[in-house]
Image 1 (cartoon, helix red, strand yellow):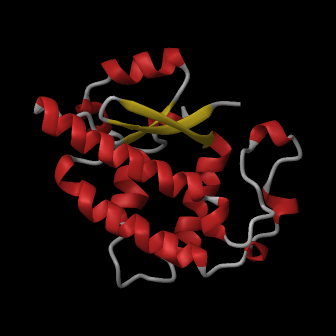
Image 2: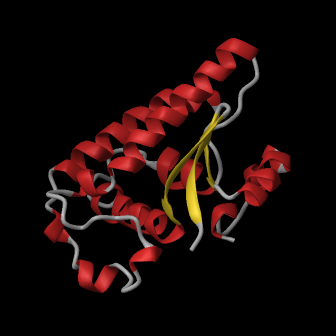
Image 3: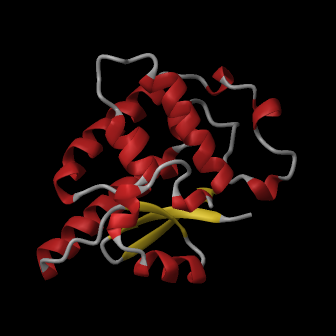
Length: 165
């Protein structure tokens, strides 16, 4: 099991497993992106999912994340068949399907996104260096690899995000 989280500024937040992140983005795509096509969700569905958020994208991404959270809060946890969705091994997922709605089930994804965004902004304001908000594996060896990975590699990325490799 790989633990995945957000990095922003000088902070890293453990959010869940790689499986949890995949399920979060599947739910985002199914319940939000497809049901609200009038809105451009690519800051979340592509930039955050596959790459990183630029400083000038943080505020708009936060607005989108808040909208997604609002939509999730209106969706009962019974919208998903958890017996089919969650792995039998509870060590593979940190999600609690017994919550009332999807916003509560994925609350760490929303809360820690906000924390990572604030950390990225604070670090920039203090040091005039932008440490981007991105999704990374949070074990020490993976963090070291991600710290050395040039942002250009993220910009050029096609296919699976680095956190899934």
